[in-house]
Amino acid sequence: METCKKVEEYRKRLDRSLLGEKLVNAESLKSLVRKQILCSAGEKEGGSVDSLVHKRTAEVSDVLDMLRSGAENYAPLPHKPFPKWKVKQDNEKFRAMYRAGPGGTATHTITVDGYVDAPLDACLYVSFETSLYPIGFPESRFHKLTTDYCKRIRLGEQVALLRANLAWPLSDRELLLHFSVLEYYEDDLIIVILNSVSEKENFHKEVDGFSIDEIPKPGNAMRVDFVGGVAFQKISDNRSFLRLIIDVDIKISYVPKMVVNFVTGKLAATAFRLYDKWVASISEGKGNQRWEMENPICQRIRDALYLHRDPDRIMETIVLHDNAAFDNPKILKETLARE
Image (tube, rainbow, N blue to C red):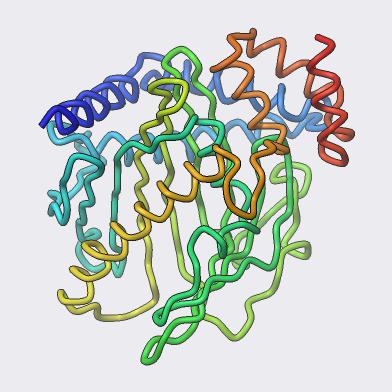
């Protein structure tokens, strides 16, 4: 009972944080996004920064609205209505819910929120290191997950290709996923924005950081459409709360209710349990993967949230040594140690 009260407190705190003034006000959010883009890329953006800020702010705003909709008492804006949630699992550790997409669409929305016994920087490290996904989510009789490609774009931003070899009668699926991070240290909050990348979109290297020629072409697997995000919030030095929400079109014209119930009620819960166990093991240095924190964005977040250093100063330090940090994480650690 006491644990159930705690997870409710964590959930309500996140709901309040997502409604913070700087995240709700359009101009404040735009200013926050601009600041972090400039700090993460320095002078490299040149005159393209305005276009990137406009695009990223719109993405962040949409994902924040999605994450807010995970609150039980959230009143959506008239122009962004959301169907009601159907609770699939709700216990002292996590909650999994499902809702159908807008009428006439093939999308499905799933959200899972709960706490994990690991620091927030460990959660982010595991989320960004896609090469580790097959370890954290091992092969089963239903699927085999592989990650063949990952391109780092800016600090806290990357594109990765995920492929799932599925059991009959489903054909294989793949997802070309763009990750970006928004840091909101006032409430110990980190937002990860997740969007699928389509070969039909127009990408400009000077704005997006990559061109269509640099990403893998579609293979034999069917590519799925995906939009969503994760909110991570620090609870204590060794506990974090997270809310994942995804809106996905798995490219099946009709999905029976039995399948929807299975996916949301079983697979989502299983994935959370695996993630919880995996991130706790990584953070404690157990298993085959040593806990090393070699991703610069994780270094920055750890220093800001756990070592209580000035995040603006950390940003400046990392940007000055940006290229060296990506090539050799040890240089980054040594540089930060001298600051």
